[in-house]
Figure 1 (cartoon, rainbow, N blue to C red):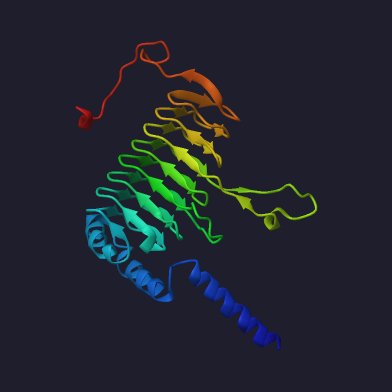
Figure 2 (figure 1 turned 90 degrees about the horizontal axis):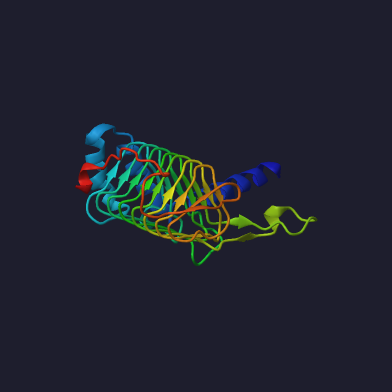
Length: 256
C-alpha cells in the first residue's frame, strides 16, 4: 500500500515538475534536447549556433546572442529583439504572460527574469524596452506584470518584485492567504542603483534615479532621485554640474 502510494506521489510530482518547465511534454523534450546539444558550447561558435538553432523554440526579431549556460523555461513565450544579449547563467522563466526583451538590450550574468504565473494572473509578464541593461544578479518577478521602458539601466543585485504575500490573519499561515500582484512600471531613462528593491505597485517616472540600497515602496515622480529605506525624494534632477562640482564626464563612442 505504501509502495503504491509512493509511486503515485512520485508520478504526480514528476508531472507537476514537467508542467512547470514547458507548455507541453513534447515542448519539454524538444527544448531540453536543444539545450543538451547546444546550450553548453562556449565562445562565439556556441553563440552563433544558438542564434540559429534556438529560433526553433523561441521568437526572435533579428539576431540575438545567447551565451552558454543560459536557462530558458517556456521558451515559446520568450521574444528577443534584434541585438539582445543574454549573458552566462541568466535564467528566464516565461510561464504564460511571457517575457519580451527589446532591441539591443543586455541581460547580464546571473540575472533572473521570472514570471512563474501558475495562479492565472491576467497581467503577468515581463516587458523590457530597447537599449536597456539589466545588471548582474538582478531579480525581476513578473507575476503582477513588469513594464520597463527604453534605456533603463539597473546595477548589480537590483530587484523588481511585482508580487506580495497577504499576511492579515494571524491564525493562518501566510502561504494560505494568497498574494497581491499590482505590477511595476519603470518609464524611460531610469537608473536603478546596486542592491535597490522596487516593490509591487510602484510606478517610477521618466528620467529618475533610484539610489543604491534604496527600497522603493511608493511612486517616484519623473526626474527625481530617491534614496533610503523606505525611499524618499532627495533631489530633483535639473541641468547643471554634478553635485555642484565640475567633474570629468566620459561618453560612449556610440553617442557621438
